Structure formats: structure tokens, C-alpha cells
Length: 213
Image 1 (cartoon, rainbow, N blue to C red):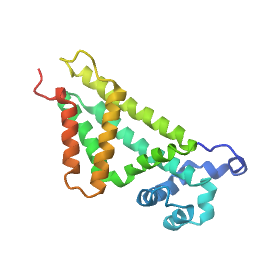
Image 2: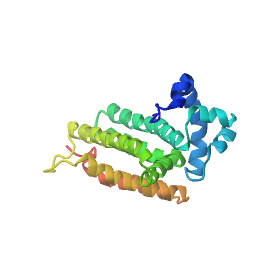
Image 3: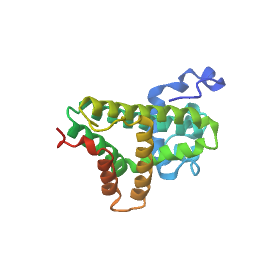
Image 4: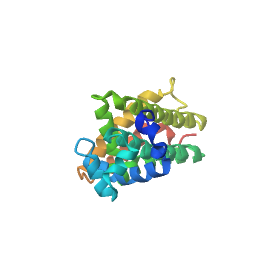
């Protein structure tokens, strides 16, 4: 996700935006970004950890802002795609609920160190407008995923007793708050974080249980 396609570097160096090389460098950079965070990282550190010259990093990325934006886009695309696949493949309410909750819980359990970058870039966006487009874009996509989930629940017979259907934005805000809280708890080595997160998610969608007629 490149928000710096213009400028003299792009014009003078057509190879700069080669997606394969940019993605390869970003994959190396992602682990360093996840470990150190945006504020403590510099491109020299990325070059050292990636085993390439600093000039190579500068060739493909204007600065560490552009690198962070690209890296977050890279992993967030995979996260969103996985959620969409879990929603699409479910053929009953029990499976839909289980697969969606499991995907969110696994993201905290297995990729928590990567997902904290999402909250890092959101914090940066409060102070730097350069991050607004990528944050707005990914939040809109995440809200869209929640809408897909709600639509699938409705199609499979969820919420038969509710007068009003949940609003995707409202549900997203709840999920996002819980995800961030239990992610922080998990990273702080709270052994109950994942279990408590799953329990909250289970209670959020009580009408998606297989016992319903």
C-alpha cells in the first residue's frame, strides 16, 4: 500500500516500486518494526536486520513512515482476507461463530507482536496526517468485514428475537476495544488473556448458538 508514488525518486527510478522487492524488504522489516515499534526504529536498523545496505532501503522506501505504512498494509491484508474466508466458508451459525472467534483469538495468541503495529500506526495518526489515509482505509475494511459477519449471521437465522439488528460500526468498536485490551494483556504475559477474550466474544453473540431453532 504505497502512498508515496509521486516525487522525483519514483520518476527517476522506475524500479523503485517493484512490488516483489518492496515486499521482500518489508517482510524483513516487519519483525523489526513489531519488536521495536515505530518511535524507536530507524532505517539503518532495518538495513542491518535485513542484511542489505542502507541505500537499498532508501531506494525502495522514502522514509520510515512509508515503510510502516507498507508493512501494516502487508500484514493487515492477510488478516482481513483470513477473516473473510472464515465467514464465507461457514455454512451454519455454530461454525460461523466458532470460526470468527477462533480467527480473532489466534490473532492475539499467535501474532500479537505483529498486530500491535496496528495500534502503533493508529497512535501515530493522531499526530501525523501522513498516516490518516492508511488508518482510515483499513478501519473501513475492518468495519466491512464485521458487516459481512453480521449479514452472514442474519442469513443463517441469527437474531430472531431482536427488534433491531446490530450496527456494524458499533460491533466493530466493541471488538476493537476488546482486541486491543486482551492483546495488551497477552503481551504482558497474562496467561488468562486468550481465554477471557474468547469468553467475551462468546457472550457478544449469544444468539448464534446451535441450540436455537
